[in-house]
View 1 (cartoon, rainbow, N blue to C red):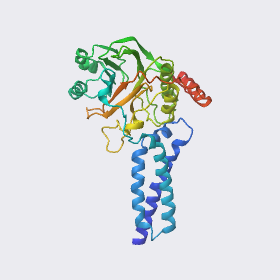
View 2: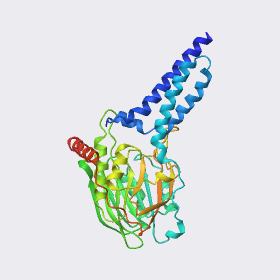
View 3: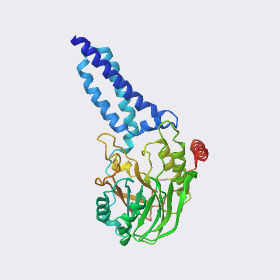
Length: 356
C-alpha cells in the first residue's frame, strides 16, 4: 500500500515537473499566440516552484533511482531555461554615479496603473507628494480619477489628459514645462499614448512617451499589442536627444517584443542593473512580475529604481530616478536587422487588420 502511494506521488511529481518544463520551453517557440506568450510572465515563480519540486525528488532517489534521475534532469533544464532568460535582470548594484553629482540634472519619473475601479485615492496622492516626481503618468484614469488627481496640478501644472471611457484613459502631470504635446493612437489601436517634449532643468529637451497597450485575450495573437510597442519605438528612434518610454506595457522586459522595442528605439532597461522589481500583481501571492516599465536612451543613467507601497490597485506604483549626463550622447540608432524589420511589419499588418 505504501509503495503504491509512493509511486502515485512520484507520478504526480513527474507530471508537475513535465508541466514546469513545458512552461519554461514553450515561450522559446516563435509564435505570437497569447497563451504561449503568457508563459513568459511567470518565469521567476515557476523557476522557484521547480526548485521546490527538485527538493521533493530527494525522497524518491533510493526507491526509484532511474525515474528520479530523469526527473532531476528535466527539472534542471526547466530551471536553467528560466535562469538564462532572467539572468540579465539580476541585481548588479545599479549606477556607480553619485546622486549628489546630479543636482541640476535629475529627472524623477513615476508611473501608476491606478486600476479604474480602485477608490483608494488618498494613498496614491500621498505617495506622489512624498516622491515629488518631475513626471507622473497615471493609467486607467476615468472621469472620477481625473477629478480626484486634479490637486496634483498645484505642484505639477503641466500635463496632458485623454479620458476615453474605458480602462485605457491616462493623465500625465509634469513639474517641468512641456511642448509639442500630442495624444496619439499608435498602430491604429483604440488606446491613447502621450508624446511630448519635456524641458529639463539644464534647458535641454527630452522626448517622453507614455503608453498602455491593450493585452490580447487568451487565444488571440499578441501582434496588435506588439505593433503599439514597435510604433512607440519608431517615434523614439527618430527623436533627437534623450528619450524615455514609460507605462504599463502589458509585457515583461525579457519578452521578445520588448527586447525588439528596445533595440529599435535604442533604449536601456534599468532593471538590467537594479534587478527584477515586480510591479504586478499586488492582489496575488504568487503572480509577481514586472509589467510597468520606464526605459530610456543611454544619455540618462538610473540612480535608483523603486516599487512603491500598495495603493489599492493590482499594480504597484513604480518610480525611477534618472541623471542626465550631457557628456554621454545616445549612440546613433543601429540599423534594423532584417528579422526585426520583418517582425515590425508583421505586427503592423496584424494591428491594421484588427483595428476598430
